Length: 97
Image (cartoon, rainbow, N blue to C red; front, side):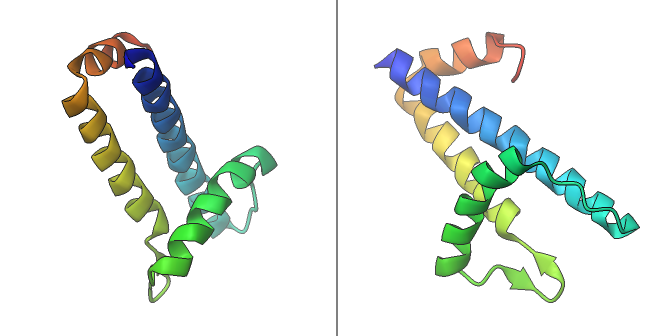
């Protein structure tokens, strides 16, 4: 069970980093440059779309979808760490965390 939760936690951490990269690349669009790799869009956009269907996530020009997804990831990670503290110890040893 610990290995399954560890894999889920690693996937959540990787998705979190992809969202950070997507946010930074969206700031570059303020300079009239469109840079967004397709692999990031292919992974992140279905999550954004599912959240946008259920919740109104725009506040004037701001899109709050990434923040909502990041909060969800933080909550899921805390549940995983509470359920199995060994996962937290193993995740903290990884260089990506």
